[in-house]
Length: 270
Image 1 (spheres, rainbow, N blue to C red):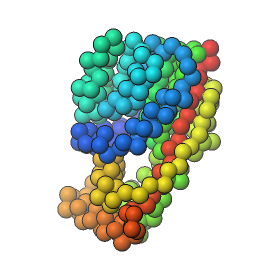
Image 2: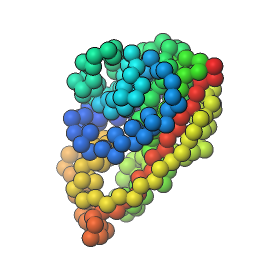
Image 3: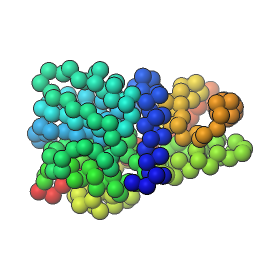
């Protein structure tokens, strides 16, 4: 793995470790999205489940509620997320939980050993998305299923328009949208090139109104690490300018934005 890829994984992991304790309160829509993803998984017995980028465990919780697996393996590069996962799900009776701190390309898991792989709101952070799909596909048994939820293209455009007009332009922050968001054809290509058979791929677009404070907190929790390497004072000044512009553009119902979720379910050929 190149030093750039390693740095990217470490930066994301460090950011999510810092915000792990605040994560679920800020992303309740992601939790609901994971539940819808799990409902779209074909009926079956999934005894061994791998959760990639497992976070605090809300995708795993949905899998447990529906399929009652015997063994769960959670992988995440953020130690803080793994601690939250263990505290919430580590003591469930009848479920053996194993956690590993690792990125998707270096998961310490045996090949062809899982009936189900889930990846909920983590795939967009993977710097090498074709490699990530191949790594997850290798972990599946023949006939096994993979279910992915990530941020889709077209979302957060209103926020992107704001940061594109705050000077000097923060190209790292602005470029994160192009680097992270993906479309249905792109996701299909990742899956097919990994040797998987797509079962269903779709997007969900939500128009939301929220307070500026709530929106800024969400951005702090899920993507604050992308702002850059400025000093704390420079970051605070930059964030304050964003917040002021969001307030200027907000209407009677608060800040309006669109969020696109991209869902995918595929199967490894038997």
